[in-house]
Length: 226
Image 1 (cartoon, helix red, strand yellow):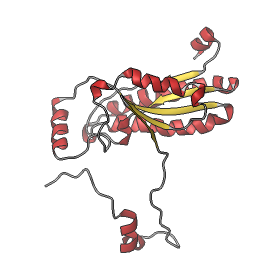
Image 2 (cartoon, one colour):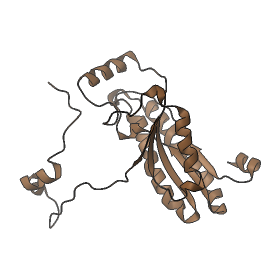
Image 3 (cartoon, one colour):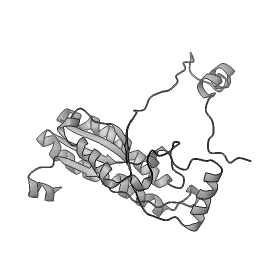
C-alpha cells in the first residue's frame, strides 16, 4: 500500500483477486489444505482491505472489489475453498457498512473463466461417480456458457465497471459473471417465516402443520440413490 501511495499519491481502487485450491473430500482434508485456502483467499484480503481502508477513509472515497466464487454455493471436494470465498462475501458486506459513511464502496464478484487443472485419480473417480448418481457437484444449476468461451476479459470488464462513477450507487452486493451472462445475486432473505407463541419447542416443530409449512418442500439432493 505504501508503495502505491509513494508511486501515485493515493489509492482509489483495490481488487483482491488471490485464490488457491487444495481439493479434498472433507474426511481427507488436511490442516495445511484448510489453512492455505483461508490464508490466501480470505485472510490476505483482510490485510489488504485494512491497509487500504485508512487511506480511503482519509481521502473520503475509494472502491474495493473482492473475488469470490460460485464454489461458495457449495462445491464437492472444495470445503476449504468454498468456506474462504463465502467468508469473503460476509466480509465484503460488512466492510461496505464500515466504510459507506466515508464514500468507500465494496462489492464481490463470483467469476467463471476458463481454467486448467487436474484432480488426483481418487478424487476424479469419486467426482465421476457422484455425477453419475445425479448429485450436484457445484451450485445447483447449469452454467450458461461453455467454460472455454468464458474468458478473463469478460470478468475484467465487470471489475472495471464496478470501479467507475457509473456504479457509484452499488455497494455491498454480490455478482456472478461468466462469458455472456452476468447476474445480480440476492441479499440473504427469509423465504418462509413462522411464529410460535411462547417460543419454539420440539413438539412445536413436530406439529404436522408447522413441519409441513416450514420444512415440507425441502429435499436432500445429495443422498446417494440405492
